[in-house]
Image (cartoon, rainbow, N blue to C red):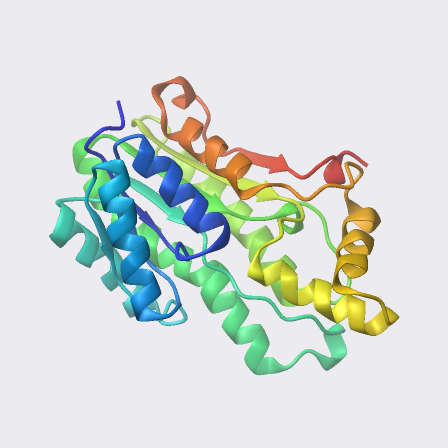
Amino acid sequence: MLTGKTALITGSTSGIGLAMAQALARQGVNIMLNGFGDPDEIEALRAGMEKDCGVRVGYQFADLAKGDDAAALVRRTESEFGGVDILVNNAGIQHTAPTQDFPLEKWDAIIAVNLSAAFHTIRAALPGMQSRDWGRIINVASVHGLVASIDKAAYVAAKHGIVGLTKVVALENAQRHITCNAICPGWVRTPLVQAQIEKRAEAVGGTVEEGARDLVREKQPSQRFVMPENLAALAVFLCTEAADGITGASLPMDGGWTAQ
């Protein structure tokens, strides 16, 4: 049922977003990529996905800290592909510091990219979804949308906000075939988390791999990183007809983190 649909996935040139883009493309979904990276590498990624999956794949940069740019990304996708059927808000940034020392510019940037950008893309995409009476909105939140950790005031606030935004959009569209759900990963070894691993390793004087094991052991009972491919499979399921009754949900994939 997904063949010929179009998905816009923010932050999809690496990590979780890329895995979701690849998984949806394998289901016959046309893809608009978005994110940072070397232009030649992004083009190779785009062309390879297009060739391997037999779908159309585009790429558009956007400064998601700016609401106008986030909305323009949706309009560009609609112009190029004819609509946005699936919207995945995945882009995110991170900074850690105690609340009293948290840099104001970092707070503003994290709220803008991790929360406000999702509002702007959803706001821009909803009219088209409503006119077609079909849409899937997936917000990549975090376990930090459900629980908190120290030194992450902005990130936790933004991810809690994403969970709340997800519920509002779900309720407003509950009588349509439009669902809005949040996926809440635990530790996934992405570039965002890698920076935290290296910081922890430096703090304790250990290797990067020791820092990785220490990070997972502290929060995640499975003591294993969640794999991007697992999250991608969940995203694909949420786009299918079988998941039509799932909306407003916050679905953890966290190795037991939030079960504690």
